[in-house]
Length: 292
Image 1: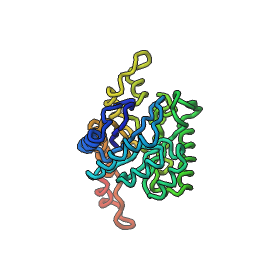
Image 2: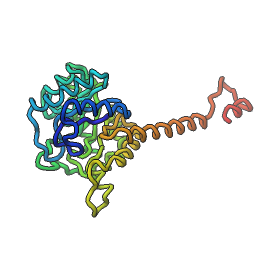
Image 3: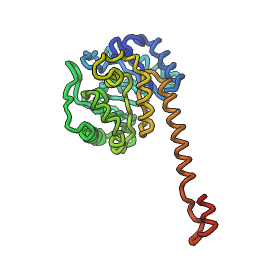
Image 4: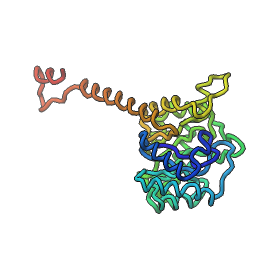
């Protein structure tokens, strides 16, 4: 999932793709580099960001969604507003990516349910205006999994089909670097919810903390793409459905290598597995030959 931020204040690339023509071109470039879908957002969700009003978000997002969809791109819309989701779906978007999981706007779930669109439910503990709110956990993995499970149940009760639900652990949202790393280490617990998992680690603060170590300042967001690709490869190996990234080529290459290695492992396991006898009692030389 390639990212197109149609915002002036995104933490990683604010203002670079702010006009429609540039944003559409960037989305097409991401597809050329290997993105399977493009996530278009018109509101920054970085800590401390001030919300834009609905009219401004629509003005930013809808022309870009329409332009990319007209080029045959599979488009996801990154929004917490039902009206933006509804108009984006009408303009050609195929998926709604709501970082609040439908909590920010009570009309969101009915809109997505009526459209039959896939819906990303992210773990969310509230808006990040004023800081990293409610980031205290006793056991971050268990608490995130339990809270996501409760949110998924609410989404299903709201009419969204189970096979339309995708979950996202919400890395960086009310979480510090230790929390994010713990969640990545236990993606199997998230997969245990029974829904595809989206991992959105790209350029986030915890990567900067890892790269800098305990005492040095973290590198700028746009210098974290190699670290992002490493997380993408690990997430793919763990079974993630998709990774959301700003720089696609490095991640696409990393995932391709991960897939190739996994294919070799699968072939080796198949070759090493004992042969099944062709009929009851088929043992002796025949069975031994098959096993070799």
